[in-house]
Image (cartoon, helix red, strand yellow):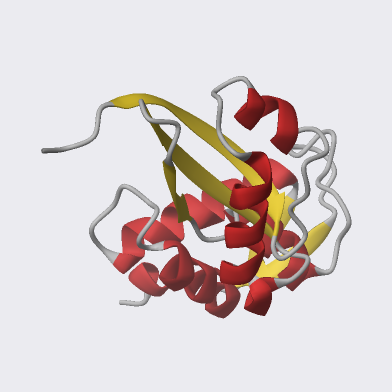
Length: 148
């Protein structure tokens, strides 16, 4: 028989660096989850991605056990790595702070494909390009779907 789910917790943690301090401790403590057990399992699973921000979805069951799914890093974080900026523009429509190429957008879209709600690579690339524009980044070159 399936376990009864009592709730979900969404967090963004640095890979390999989860500890019981806020925000992880209070979020999991309120659901009755063993915080140290989560930290040990999360750090063990993310040893290869140390320091990268990783979204994690934790499913909490009635018997206080849990499961978690680690997602890919957010598109905004990946765009900042590729364009070598520390933060996005305050006025993204007026002040552009960096550039990315369509090849970089395609690489990020392929990485994020499992987490995005789209079916084709072109639509995933459009979503990532939209994120880039809203951060104040310009996408250099012509879009692959415009090459006639």
